[in-house]
Image (tube, rainbow, N blue to C red; front, side, top):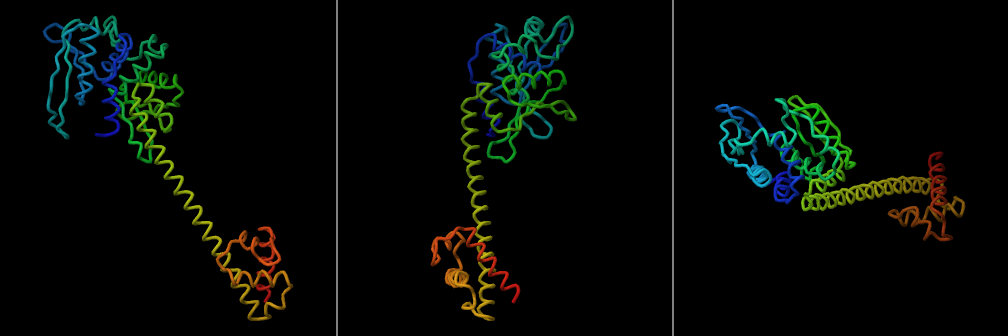
Length: 306
């Protein structure tokens, strides 16, 4: 099971207040519902490929609208032959849609009810329903943090983005070929969104995985920096040794000023030491790191002249 499926499963198990359940159901119907007429009667079909979400829709309709609904199972024949679950409602359809602000005066309302937009608790429930209907989130172990909610309608997508940003989630929108997307890219904001919709366990799992992953990346970066510094130190030491040996083979180290001779002989005896270690241990020391470096530059210049 994917991380997104875990989040959705947790959301389907939440108990919610009657008014908040209506907001969640409004999102599920608006995004996954289809209205048709059969034998002069309106029929509402709400479709999902997730059995837990279909059961959630069925129970929300039954518990909060006291209406009878059917739960049907179909087998997809194209591509992946998954089951498709359909919640079918034949009774009081227009009354339900009217109360949920989805259908009014013969028109489908694609935008979100302003009452929901103005109420944080209802907005949380609507976002939960929207995520159940058209949401996805990458596994936090992935290097690409991404959460999105898909919608068929531009105005509805803008409303979803606005509701996300009621909770400072820094959500943005983008147009896709077949619809519209509201998305979040920052790991911390994705964790906040999971908390907003009530998926607390998924949020803690996301944070745990993310923190471990980020810590591992930080350790790797530190190790890479340390290795780079070691390589830099080794290269510098090798050049210093080569310069000192050239001086030794041509004019001899004893021809150098006393302080340069001391540090030259100490470097030959300790080719692996850093400048700081040399400054702390060289005879006549201690010497600052910049002082040691200054003496090696003098030795390198003498070697270059030779």
